Amino acid sequence: MKWIVCAIVLAFLNGCGIKEQVVRVSVPDVHANPEQGPVIQVNPVRDNRQASFLAQFPAATRDKNVGGVVRGGGGINVVLDSTTTTLKTHSIIVQALRNMGYRTADHCETSCPSITPRLNTFAVLMPFNFWRAATYSQHMLADIAVQITLQEQGHTYTFEASGHGSNVYQVVSQENWETALDRAVKDFDSNFQQQMASQMDQAATKAPKATD
Image (cartoon, rainbow, N blue to C red; front, side):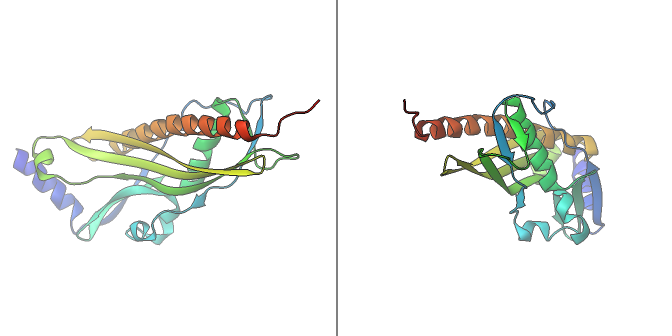
């Protein structure tokens, strides 16, 4: 039976063309924009993902791609259901900031801190391992990495927020892709908030002192 499972997986991926799998990625802890609190400007996310990775998939859906697998002329193109990858990343970052107590804005009427995100990775992969397949313990691995440039009080700070998620699966399905991606998003959300708080604390120590 184990050998049959391995053969099915290999046959599915090889020589059958690239099939599209639509997924929904959740944004954790969604709340409305606070009416009070410090304002922060969130600039559009710049797409800095590797062109060589995206080139594996159809050009028409590369802006919505969140991973997949291509082997021997066949594979799966995992794409978001209703938005682009950069817009989804923007939504995740905006919500993380709101959960930290910030009021987010596209533009500030007065001086305020701003962040510019650059998306380096947002993908779930399905690395094939024969022995894992034989023991029904294949892994889907999802990773998100975003370089954040923070500008505050004339100073610039840069850090990379990242998240990782994995899912042991027996069937290649929409639900299993989504499970790995949602776990990566939650991990990214936590990592982003921790690093953002640290950077803002550092910025506060460099802020000009009030004089009497």
